[in-house]
Each structure stands twice: as C-alpha cells, then as structure tokens.
Image (tube, rainbow, N blue to C red; front, side, top):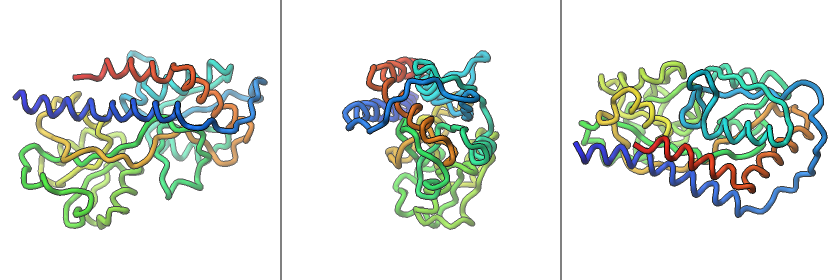
Length: 272
C-alpha cells in the first residue's frame, strides 16, 4: 500500500515542481516591449471564460478559485481592469471566445492548430501530458509516445491532448473522445478495459482520481511530458491596446512575486 501511495504522491508533486520552474523562467525572461497604458479600459468589463480544471480553475463553496484564476483576476484587479468571469464547459468556452471580440479564455494550451485562431496574451502555467493506465496493466509499462499507434486511447473532446495524439501518429479510429462534462467516465472506461491509456494533464487528472477514490487503481505510465504552456488568450480581433494592458498587468504580477506566492499556496493544498 505504501508503494502505491508514494507513486500517487509523485504524480502530484512532480507537476508542481514543473510549475515552480516555469515561474522562475518567466521571471528571468527578457521583458516584453509592452507600451504601458494606465488609463481605465473603455467600454464593458473584460469578459473572462474558463472551465472546471482543478487546480488551475474551479469553483469551491460558490467562489472562483485556482492557480490561474487567482493569477489572472489579481493581475486585472491590481491594474484597475474590470472583468466578469464565467465557468463553462470547455467546448462552449471556446465557442464563446471565438465568436466574441474582446473575450478572453484560460487555461488554453497554445498549439499549432490553434495559433491563428486566438491572440496569445501571456503564459500562465506549463502544459504537460501523461499516459494513464490501470495499475494492473503492467504489460503496458514500456509503452511511450513513440509506439502508441496500435493501442486504444482515450482523451477529452476539444482538448489539446487529441491534437497531441494525432501528432504522435495514433489513428483516429483508435481514440475514444469523452465530453468535457464527464471526465469521471474516463476512469470507468479504463477500468472496463475499453481503452489502454488515457492522455491527460498529470496534475489535473491525479486530482480527479483522488476525488473519485481511484488514485491506486490508475497510475501514470512514465514521466510527464512538457508540450508547451497554458495561456490567457483572446479573440484575435480584440483591441490591441487592451491586449497590451492585460499582458502588462500579468507581467507586473509575476515580477512582484505574487504569482509565485499563489503557486506556493496551492502547492500546500494539493500535496497528498
């Protein structure tokens, strides 16, 4: 039992270490050449949309919480930028932002397929993926991203992980896509043996497993892979001055050390 528990602890702690490294790199990166405009944003409040994706964005006791939620909202508040925040299923959040200039979305992974569909404002956290399998399927232990073509895969519809599977050469016929409102069904699907692996964010899915009491039944099949970053992004026709102001607000928050402090707070909460 102790060995299994330790494996789950690694699943949670290793992605948090990646978050620490991410924020350290941002602080050391050259400053972007944003013109600073301290005038109040004109018109309506900034529209923010996100999804339930603990620990990055979620609701708890009626309040919006999460690493990315706190970073984005605190940055806007410090800059005096009014906003509204709405939690939507991922496919609806994407549709909302793609149809509404001035709307912003997070946490969205920046991928080649999405590059021209959005204005990319600022990175918020590293985007990682991991292959999850049943603990009992030790025959799959040696499988990695380079030899998945003959295996049955599961992923969430509309997530960047389905793009990753295509890049890895997994045929579409081998992939079962689940609605984003029903992530727990993935666990049942794997337990029934209908897929060999689920590709997901290791930190997010390990929290889902713990909440479902399944952290010992499913394990991460090898180390997590960094595939990019989660971003705050916006409709491409959003006012460039607003994009610059929001980006500058996030940069200031990082340089103040507050983004690092937010990460520390959530790291303490999520340790098993």
